[in-house]
Image (tube, rainbow, N blue to C red; front, side, top):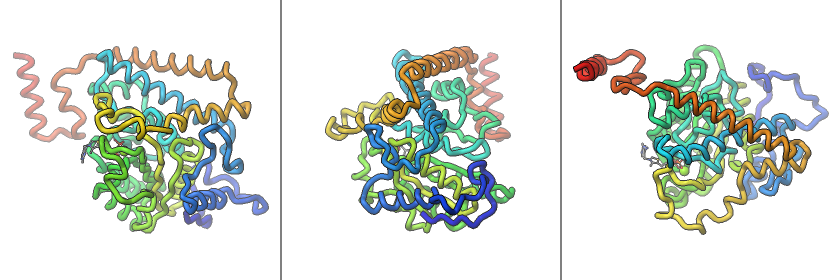
Length: 387
Ligand SMILES: Cc1ncc(C[n+]2csc(CCOP(=O)(O)OP(=O)(O)O)c2C)c(N)n1
Ligand SMILES: [Mg+2]
């Protein structure tokens, strides 16, 4: 990764801190060297190994940041687990689970500030929650309720994208719009391994590079595009290298190591904020769960395909690290569980209390101003209801 430290346009709190002491090793240069070394050795950049052992102590974030990332991963995992139960009891619509991918979603989204944009896909409920989407609204969305359709006005988050890859060019547009307004606020967009074979992905990377857009592109390689394994949908074995074709940095990271994912993403966010352009980050992870809760993966993959991934779990990995380092006790962890459960139950009660949608609401939130056709259809539905 190229890292110029000459720009003075930094606007994020992290980037605008005092100039580094030249006697100390530059953490940016150290990070860049570590990413490059891992890539050259065909390994994933990692800060903690699956058993919790630290591999790069000099690059670890402070304990408060590590705890905050742990808390957020536990929180979004709880949502994913409860979604399954709600679905099985008829209280949730079809949901695309992300359990096992929390590091990839939290480590990335947590590197943004509220001034930055988030463009999530259907897989990225964990990233949206980490960014700040309220749980009641998120539940409403996945219950197909109009209460979840419009994103809160105070959040720069787009609705979950269902059409594959369309969010990438949109994110470039958002970053360019920010630049026209004189800011370097960052647009972060997610995509899957399958989505990275779509034309929109490549057009967006080229466009962002050519126009130096402040984008951070997250490519979550979870091994599967529904029933198609990554190895079958492309001959490429290192998807981060796709960045080379567009003259932008590409980084490959262990997507089950939240500290590594956060480190790499924060570097890319700071870089974009300094006006140095976009980065592509491939987070290598695994979709342990079905494609959606309505999918049966035993139809297309075997236990041998999934082997080894449970042992790489991102939550137990960081937990082991925090317990071993004395940053977390069993009692504090149990207390955290109680807090997370209480937060979710209160949010569920709030979502349950949303009024039943009326038929005409299906036409709301399509356009800021309804088209003449939508206005006519709305009037027709209201007339039929009244009849
Ligand atoms: C343009 C478009 N083509 C096809 C689909 C159908 N589709 C839904 S999910 C999916 C697989 C996507 O896989 P990947 O990008 O790896 O994301 P993941 O589900 O693994 O997060 C496909 C082909 C779609 N939603 N949009
Ligand atoms: Mg995938």
